[in-house]
Amino acid sequence: MSANASGGSGRLIRWLGVASLPCLLAVGFAAAGGWLSPHRVTPNTMLAALRGVDGAHPGFRRNHAKGVCVAGWFEGNGQAASYSPAFAFDTKRVPVIGRFALAGGMPYQGDAPGKVRSMALALKGPGGQEWRMGLNDIPVFPVSTPQEFQALQQAVRPVAATGKPDPLAVQAFRAAHPWLASAGKALAERPITSGFENDTYLSLDSFVLQGVDGRSTAIRFAMVPEEARFADMPGKGKNASFDQLDEAISAHPLRWTLVLTLAGADDAVNDPSRLWSGQDKQITAGTLTLTHLASEAGGDCTDIVFDPLVLPEGIMPSDDPVLQARSATYMRSFAERSREKRPRPAFDPAVSPSEKTGSESVSSEKAS
Image (tube, rainbow, N blue to C red; front, side):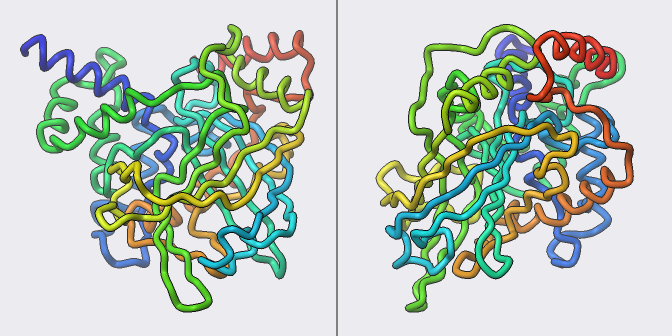
């Protein structure tokens, strides 16, 4: 194998490790949809592919396993109301339950700065309406279909002999999907902020706003922090990013702006692996304010399935196959973990620093 081939495989493995990904769970199979063969891609085979990469960790989410609950509110500013009557685009404050997490299925993984971070939110509207979001701090999803995602997981799963992916399998996947180079470049060049509290989180998938006048507008959206810092990295320790988040939110409320990006004529609405034009129109729709954290050991977010197909009136899913596929896998994951004993999470904001040090030792033993 040539040095270039080895180097290319190594780079792919690095960003796939990063990108095994926020959206890992973001790719399942809508069993009732009828657009995939149930013998090839199903919620069960998708979850098995995830386990093949990070192992089995009963009681935890199958992706974004290491996380913490958060709560606050969202207040719209009315600027998007002409595009959709969705409650979030009104000017009323609504409660929010959310979760910050690291991508991947390993609940006791360390907090390296380059890890993909996620923000999941459930905005609670009137009449039982909700808007659930699954956002990640990467610019694109690495693949465009559920079939590709499952094949990707199978290509990068560690082999018993080395504990690392088989370079030949990775090389074969790359050869069959040459467009991965552009997605990998976007992922590798993404800016990395100092922590959860000042990161930008993107929907990756597209949605459609339905106006009262019958107009439909395809969008992607992002939560943009009040202040992004790129110089300072979190301190050392397995839970450094979570500790930093805890300190920041204890000092003052954390705020993000909801920014809607309207699809242009040449933007790929149904392909989350492709970037949109930097010239697209954007609308600032409101402000997210988060005020406190809570452990997943009984926190309000623990039993929420952050299914991005839970949408309020006025917002519809696009025909993005990845988005359409997520719901069934999310629900299957929840069904599995709800039957399992609830384990101790890796991070608990209520635990003192000395106790956290002790729990990290326990966590390391469980992870080994």
